[in-house]
Amino acid sequence: MLESTEKVVNENFDPEILAMFIKEAVRVIGDLFGQAFVKSILNYALEMESEKIGEKKPEDINNIDEAFEYLKEHRDKYPNFFNCFIYGIAKAEKMFEGATASGAKNLAQTAIRKIIDSSGLLSEVKGKISNIYEALLRYIEIVDVVRATTPQRIVNQSEKVIFQEITGDCPWKDGCIAMEKEGITRMSGGPECVVLITNSAAVSLISGKLVDYKLDKFNRPNCQGRIFEI
Image 1 (cartoon, one colour):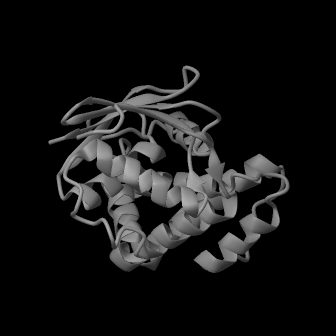
Image 2 (image 1 turned 90 degrees about the vertical axis):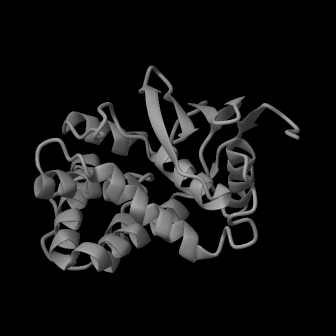
């Protein structure tokens, strides 16, 4: 039986922790698709960083670790530098797969799901909480400990549907806005949402159920969406 049908989650994130998480996602993508794809990701990530900090894009960065260190060195000018990796992934997918970048969501979710799974964060709860709302609550409790929590309100709308609203200044917003400007959307249409991608991947791992998400409102001023069983 559910203890609550609504949960407000406070902001608790360390930009460097989030950046390390996404850096590992890029590494996973490299294992799946090769280093040419990774180089493309890094190129676009550095382009976004260059625009954010007002400096010329460096030309001597050749791998993920070098890119990460460069972005981290300039975090005083752009603290949420992890968004550059998010944008780089989506833009590279757009260039490789076509104008709609229809595979971007699957690529990002596959990589993020693998990182969450291999990290061991969910080892004690994986496959053990069948209700998707309870699964999401447990995931948020876990990532709050490692300071990777986005401010949000989640509501148990039904046994198979979770409503989610970003309640504060989302740390991932820059990446999502950059994707929107590039016309990068989901296969089903509409903008992407890093929080929904991550939450749905975790819910699937914990519950053992297939889930998807839909972003209903983007940046007006907060984002709202749903995670649901399929």
